[in-house]
Length: 226
Image (cartoon, rainbow, N blue to C red; front, side):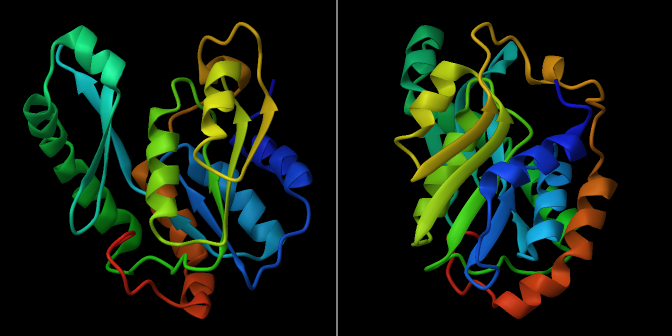
């Protein structure tokens, strides 16, 4: 049981160990991943950026992800084939559903980044952080997006997650760090005493506070994370 997301970040920090701040970038999944990553970035002195991924829910069952969509010059859709088959949705159906999520990504990009481009990930050790994972759909999509940016190493760092989901993540990154993998996993929030909603304003404030490290680390010139 974690006290809150900050507590989870401090405990993840101990497991991450020493990382070269000149060659490491921390990426957080909004919104819950930002307070976790904030603590780690401060302690290690590494740049903190954000990765935009939206879950594409099944019509009438928005919490059941049939796909995820990541933003970029060409949005990338990652389909959960099993859910798509069960829901009777083809690629055209999923593409239309994914299109509806793009305005929210654009809205968050405007608020969170305020016109700042993403930091370059090429040749870096990239640590992708969230506050916990259940199905892992958004984390897998984020890891695949990061892979396309040609990093040297990709690490997924999560306080808590389903054991089966954590095992599946090993195919998408070089290392998975997960502090708790309970046998009977129900929901991420059950493993926090304080799991209050993280606001857009909080996310923007965290990113702004770390903006100087993004500037010092150089900007991305590709379209993978922009």
